[in-house]
Image 1 (spheres, rainbow, N blue to C red):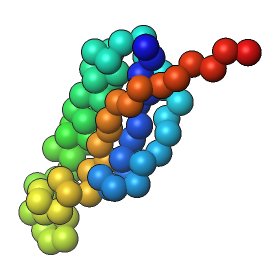
Image 2: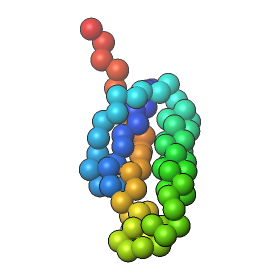
Image 3: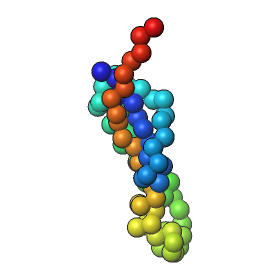
Length: 77
């Protein structure tokens, strides 16, 4: 079975990525890498912006794009 990474923009709106993996493990590793990149970018932001409302850590975590892996049916032609 193939697996597709779907990104949840602002944690709500699903967006198809077109990224298809042969195993669930590969897909989940990609999602974890995406989440780590978001964390890296956030932590690179100056501390004053991290703590200033509405850009607090709580606010950003709620708005952060996340992902999930769903089964993907292969079409045969």
